[in-house]
Length: 168
Image 1: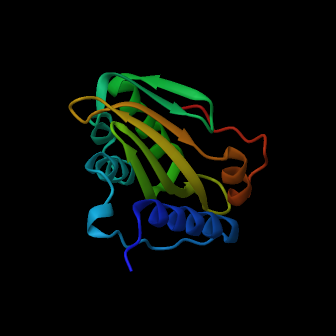
Image 2: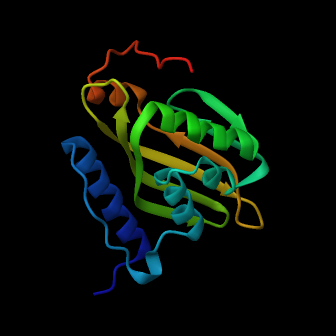
């Protein structure tokens, strides 16, 4: 029995939702024809790595990066690299685990788990995240919008809802 790409995506989305509700994670075995696009693999590797410039290098010179959880937007490679550096300075073990992707031309939707340990927080966090990536003709990221619940990050971390990060 052969599954359609839509059926596979539906199953992956459902499994991700169940895991998010239960607070667990699941490993996803990607069928050969369903592997994440290279841009997504590079994006996740850059977030999971220690070099902020590696993330910035994936973006176009005039790109935008919007963290919808915090309501901030950054413009261009240098700002994106700076955001990654700031994130690394506030969160230990920042990690993005890609669970599913959907591509429509140069538009990619990524379902993932965003995790880490806010410095000074009693507990780590792991929350569902959706990311919308738009690529240019050279497969660089022109736009990135990350959607996750800041309240869930703070709650799981054992921090009050009005917590704000220290200024550098």
